[in-house]
Amino acid sequence: MSFKNKPVFTRSLLHPRYWGTLALVGLMYSLSLLPYSVQLFLGKHIGRLAIKLMKKRQHIIHRNLELCFPLMSVSERESLVKENIDNTGLALFETGMAWFWSDARVCRHVTIKGMEHMEQLEREGKGALMVAVHSMNLELGARAFGIKKTGMGVYRPNNNPCFDYFQYQGRSRSNRTLIDRKDVKGMLRALKTGKRVWYAPDHDYGLRRSTFAPLFAVKDACTTTGTSLLVDASHCAVVPFTMVRDNDSGHYTLTICPPVEGFPHKDSDAAAVFINKIVEQSIMAAPSQYMWLHRRFKNRPEGQSSLY
Image (tube, rainbow, N blue to C red):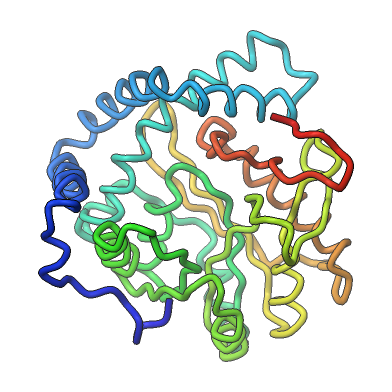
């Protein structure tokens, strides 16, 4: 979504149909004011309660972990499921932190490593495709980065116009702009002019502009070829990063990796295999903090049955 189309607050968003949304956003704001330790405690317990009401999502978490880590023992997998459920509840609070905390409060809780790689690319005038995965705290990581450097986030407008307004406002704080995920030309313009674009190629976005490539133990994971398109057309750097919360201290570390070498140009299939290796490494930085409740393997090659 480019700046000219950014959502604006109108009186229509006060209609009773949006009162639930307004109440949710108000709750997120109120909770963000609580001491951080209280938010951590509440988030874990809310996650455990919510997952009991979402049996289907609980099954998806179990199934994804079973598919990706078939050699993991049952006890290890169950432990990972429990941690992931706790972190799913924390995601509500971490989103509130990202949208409503002051810059100073974000900086107190997030340490950034590897910013020298961004500064080197700036000196070279080279754009960077910032490759992320959907960790539960990705919103907070993007906010922390934005305090230090500008960035452009690839964005899917929410179907609820009221929530979309607050989501846009929250995500565009601290030197961040947003661009619609369908605006490929806009992404290319940004990358060609030395800007940074946040990009998460780890989900199943459908069969259009995709190929099948290995991901963990799953041989055929539907993987976007958009990464290949953007890199080949803009000659930008590919820069992975991770956002990890320490389980003991609760402190976050955003790690910016050096630009990758050996990206397979002009070969979208090979590029999908390459990028999935980066995705695996990023997820394994904190597997319990990844969004396992997404149906990552919903699309299958023709003739293959559903994995769910």
